[in-house]
Length: 292
Ligand code: NAD
Image (tube, rainbow, N blue to C red; front, top):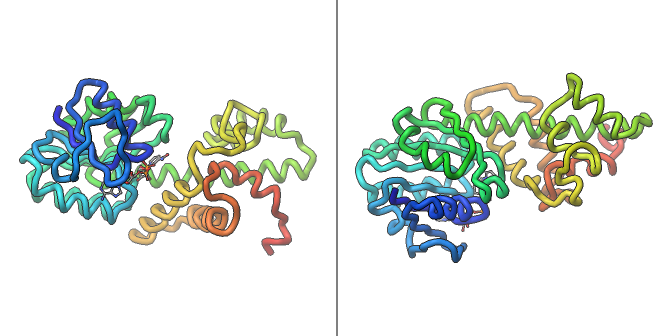
């Protein structure tokens, strides 16, 4: 396929490189990043013109909307705009509507798996759009990832992503605060892990990504909380979940509390640039009386 790839940052560059390595003709554009392993062009318009599929991997919904309005008029009829950025559901749906109005297919397919998954081609894609649009780009998902789930119409990929990450943020906080309570009750972290990871408190946050160093499988906690998945990216996703919850009047008190706590951690404490599991050492420095 002829592929235009717009947004070659930490995630986009390795995804585009994997597509090129698999034999696709990739033209990449980014105003800042210049990965040497790719054929680069000078504008998004050049990357998009004549492509079968244009992939965007951008920081937020406003930038996505701006890029989409530049490239849609230049794309071939029936080409596909595949957006893999994490953005708000409204932007995803607005961009998909604009694509359809320009006789294009639109698929929103945010990812989980992080920079490591992008480099190794093991991302998970959660996709919104028509079945036909999804099937048109399935072979690209197979190269960039290990799993792609069609979640329904446009915007549903973003909906799945923010619901998943709202659960993740909440369970990471719950797991971290429980470890600190266990410390104060004299329970060893190893015993806590052995019980919870095989009991009803189990979760991905405990079992796979344990926030306590030297406990459970290797995780960022064992590497001084180097990300991994940075706290500010978790905050971005929690905020998107709350924007969406407000828009549809969904009651999400735990998601709201998690967004407030990660805001404090990133903006007022030492969370910026640390893995999101550094919530555990954060709780170690706090006491109950400070919060009442
Ligand atoms: P990044 O900041 O490294 O890359 C974004 C790139 O977009 C930058 O290189 C920037 O120059 C480029 N860009 C900005 N404006 C542009 C424009 N108008 N035209 C073309 N390019 C433009 O971010 P990232 O970590 O690669 O993340 C990209 C997306 O993936 C985000 O939506 C993020 O939330 C999501 N995501 C990131 C991770 C992760 O672990 N980094 C995991 C899952 C999802």
